[in-house]
Each structure stands twice: as structure tokens, then as C-alpha cells.
Length: 113
Image 1: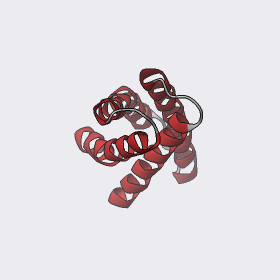
Image 2: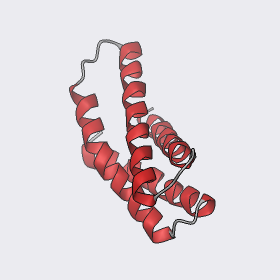
Image 3: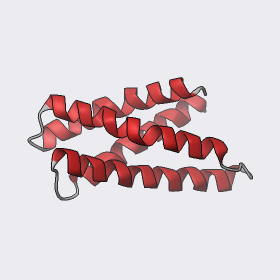
Image 4: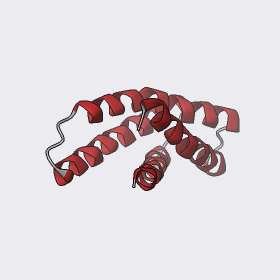
């Protein structure tokens, strides 16, 4: 999958979901939630793509472990960014990052399927 398509698909899945979660569960205004959702993806997606495209592919199981580990790191970074940029506390930024990234990985897997 070309990078632009992967980024577009990620944004298509994650941005509306993240914006909806944040505006319904916190006092964050919709415009700030939308901007944060786009920005966290623009920060994390390029390094994730580079890492996964340059990592060795030694079979399906090791690559799957690599993807899951990389996605976990992305979730943590995105959660920390959401927490700081939107002044969120508690589990909300972590749950939001985990949910949006899980949805994106699922959709990506279905598209590539």
C-alpha cells in the first residue's frame, strides 16, 4: 500500500473516532479535538511507516509481533500527546489512543486482507 493511501486511511478511521470520543467524554471543544486527532497522527504515522517498512520480514509471526509492538508504542505516544495538548487526565487519553489505533489496524487489515 502506498504511504499516502495508508496515511489517508488512518486519518479517515482515527480522526472522526478520536474527535467523537473526546468531545463526548471530556470538555474538549470539537475543533481542538479534531486538530489534536490530526496532529497526533501526523506525528506518529511517518515514523511508524518508516519503521515497519525498513524492519526485517522474517515470517508472519515475527512481523505481526513487530507490528503489535510498534502500534503499542504509537498508542503510548499519542496518549501522552493528547494528555498534554488537551490537558486530559486519567485513562481517557490512553483509552482513546488504544481504541482509535485498534480500529485503524482492524480496518487496515481488512483492506489489505
